[in-house]
Length: 81
Image 1 (tube, one colour):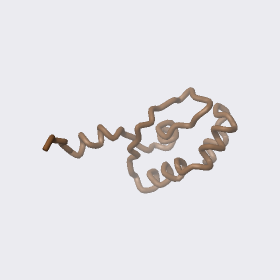
Image 2: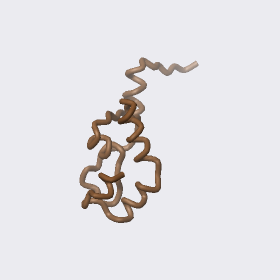
Image 3: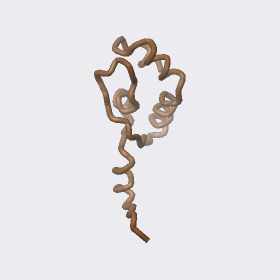
Image 4: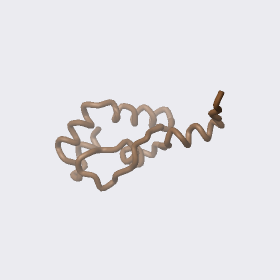
């Protein structure tokens, strides 16, 4: 949370929205427990109006992946019945 609040790039409304949600807690949990976050969000490192999970994760060494890459890594196969 402190990193987001001290980051001059982000607007005050973006910081407030991030602080009021669960994203910060999710990243902190993943970092402490060495977990990966699965998200459809794409990095937006130059955004000023929204703070994306992949951008925060990259600052704290938390891996991210898409749901599709997660399913591939788990060898999930979807078949028509």
